[in-house]
Image (cartoon, rainbow, N blue to C red; front, side, top):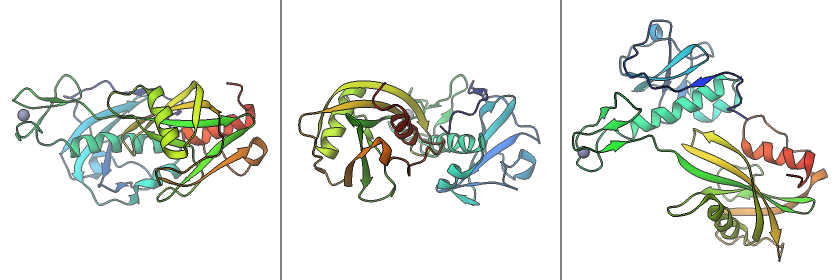
Length: 262
Ligand SMILES: [Zn+2]
């Protein structure tokens, strides 16, 4: 998956750390990112001081530029970059959006300041804003030797798994049951946690589960979010490659190899 970079991702917050000329600065617009010679620009390459420390990968520091930079690549292109660059770009985008969306206090309207101890934005009124991470589930629904693949009505056009955001007051298991019923009208049991994945593009944390379908196995597309839901035998999954990026593809590949032995 995109986060499996085989390097140490270190997000100790170092508010006072200032970039040296050869440190890297991740630059974004609200719809893309900026590279020079297919790599992240260095501090000496950019003309902004509106920068905050982001994170380290092994011993390399990455800062985030908070200006709106003209992008050289649309945001979706991070999927095509070599590891670990794709992870670095999309993780920095999550940081960028946190700062972009939290300039003023939602309680009193005053301008927010950077937290100096933790990665927060703070207000004189006492309000502290932490980075927003939205939990979501991805669900591999299994019926013996078949798995249910879906296609969205709009947007992402390839086969996917049932997925959705956790809502207030729900456990992740509640979210799994609700999303499965809302999207494909099926009942499930035996919820098994698989793995999780940070997904900076949507600012979410994805949790993957396998579940067993019980009762009626005919999917019903109830809420219109999907245009297709089809049971695939394991030997019908050959055309769906594990892209090494997404939890969804890894779960489909896992089922193809192992069936429901999880
Ligand atoms: Zn305030």
